[in-house]
Length: 341
Image (cartoon, rainbow, N blue to C red):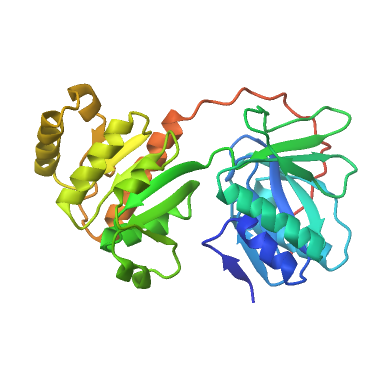
């Protein structure tokens, strides 16, 4: 059995894994050159019979899982390994990836520590991870408010890895638990969005019991208590409620995105009425309606959800500041050939 936790990220699964008494191995991309399937910081959690998250798939991931399970079985394993993504690994990316292997022992103290860290990440806080050559595992701590750190720290004689985990998460509030809302919520929880999903109808929770739905008699209250620079998507069962939500979002003047499901006709009517309510044309112009990347004609809930999620991720990527380039690390060139069996 090799069950992949497709709907989770590694830090969501790790506390439960350790609490169940199972050791695990974190496999992390710490450096890349050339064309590679994942970026530095991508992490895979490997257990004896389960893996969660991904370092890119293909034969690279096959090798990583096999090496991690050797480590779980008591075998030896270099902590830092360079893989060339060429013919030897039966991949044609052409780049190279350095993977860091860390075995985490299962005990109640570690399980509790990781439960607290996962809760912090879920709240939108950030963790600082630091590994130095010779250390068995990374050290972790909460990143203090206002503290700025680069994600990579290295020198030629004593290679190391520093990562800010959770730095790219962003708050998003989705209003509406109809067919499209449910499809979009299921898509967004697999991204870096810190999703809060809101509806005024308690019965809707039963339609998606695996997702946390905030049932709110007055959904506008969920606009008022949202954090600054929040992303908002409105798709409720009521045009009247849609309008109230959009007006409240725009009046905040600090939304990162205000998206409304609907046609061009609905968009024109809403914009006209928002101006009549006293909002400036410049503020009203911040409303995005219709939503979703152009060119997708399919109106099924799944297709609309994919189009909207893609639009959010594109805009999010464009809005992020480019990180300051870190010094290029000089890691030892430990090269492992592909397995033959």
